[in-house]
Length: 315
Ligand code: C5P
Image (tube, rainbow, N blue to C red):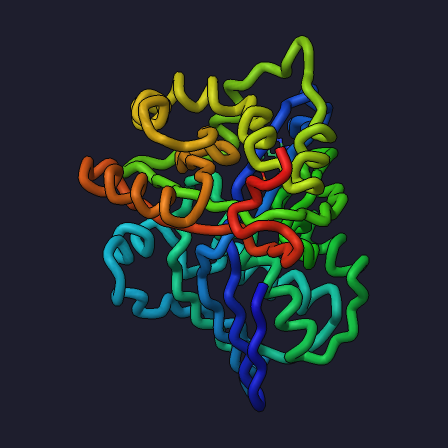
């Protein structure tokens, strides 16, 4: 999350995330699934602008993000009413803090919805942090974490400053990881999306669950090739059964020069982990040529100055 504050306005750039590892451990009584996942934030951003209102109203307007290719496709799927997680986050904070202060929010979307990139969750987390500042509520990080978990399983992850974490429970128990490498990705969001609940509804907990610690360690030690070999997403099999676009991307990435590839979260976005920025751009060019959907080149938001730029030094 990148903040800029001036007078009565706060501007936040909210990152997307990728799941480098996701294992489903079991179904819970509350309908959720216990899981272990390793997530990293990447530099694909939505932009949120908060301006304090004289009334106690919470208003949301979608900005005209029409400057870039694909903006119309992204904006089409985003609710501008009380169903938007941004409005739900603002209302939850307003109600629990008992404040009568209001806000006008502008949301410029760039992160596609229903894609496993968690744009809505990232926006919700940013809303909690921004309004805590703007309204001067002095909620503690623990209080914000508790509200975030109420809004969605992925929301607490975006409150961690590291940009990388091993998450457990239904995803809300966040253990930050100090990553030691820069990761480069190419991401494709096909023309169709998937609902998280639908994909979880079709997954079966693994009989021999894998743990996320190994992958977290590889991230900690900057072992990018080993990390690529250890990538895993238990939701990919059900998602590819439900959605032919995911199946197609599996096949296409199999023949591309990437270190590793898989779906993120519950899909449908699919990513390749690349050796460096140049490789990511090259692969993106090939994918754009095929008109499979929106294609992004992105990098992880953590950086370690003591490592080589592509993080491939210590395998
Ligand atoms: O927590 P969130 O609102 O993002 O979850 C959306 C839906 O995804 C849940 O209602 C549930 O059906 C499913 N889910 C799950 N187990 C998780 C996270 C989400 O079954 N750990």
